[in-house]
Image: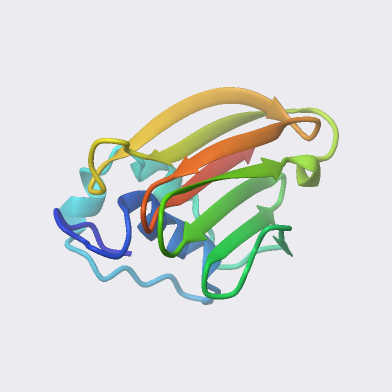
Length: 146
């Protein structure tokens, strides 16, 4: 994960999704610490685990084009989406959450700038489907907590 003003191949949301997608027993971030501390998604970044209890590769994933992962640690779920190539819209059923409501923190691509994110708070459950707009080389992260 690295935050710079100009990345031609991925957005900040994509970079955050890398942390929740790639498996490593030790998370290593190649970025200046201040760039992480200044990021609006700092709270979500800090909650990404190095080890997960459960990992699901969700439908719509295609090697080299789109990865959609749901990962669980205890009763917290993360949804991480990484896209390659042009902008697109994806729909992701939240059935992996099961029953009950979750407080969701959603980290979207900014429509104006690849070096920014938009945060949204919501209450969501497994009966919902998220419609997510991804920028060129975009990404998305959602943290679900009870």
